[in-house]
Image (cartoon, rainbow, N blue to C red; front, side, top):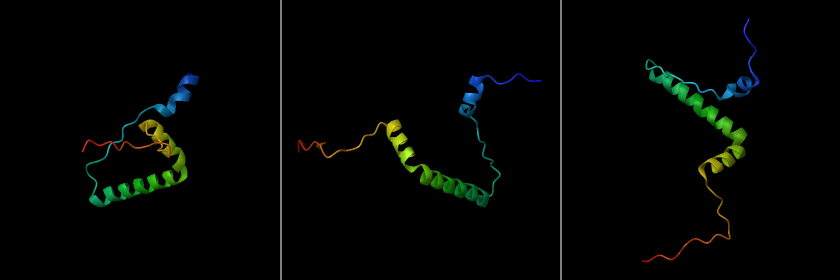
Length: 78
C-alpha cells in the first residue's frame, strides 16, 4: 500500500516538466499531420483565451500600451 500524496505534491503535480521526443522515422505526411493538428489546437486555444493570453504576454514581455498622452520623441539631430 502506497502512502497518500502530500498536499504539496498534489498541488504541484501540474508543474512537472516533461520531455516530448519526436521520432526521426516519420514520413513527411505524418510530420505535416502533426504540424497541422498543433496549428489548429493553437488557433482554438487562442480563440477561447484570446484576451487573457494577450494580457499575460504583455506582462511577461514587459510591453506597455501607447496612450494618446504619450508623445513620441521628434528631436532628431539630422
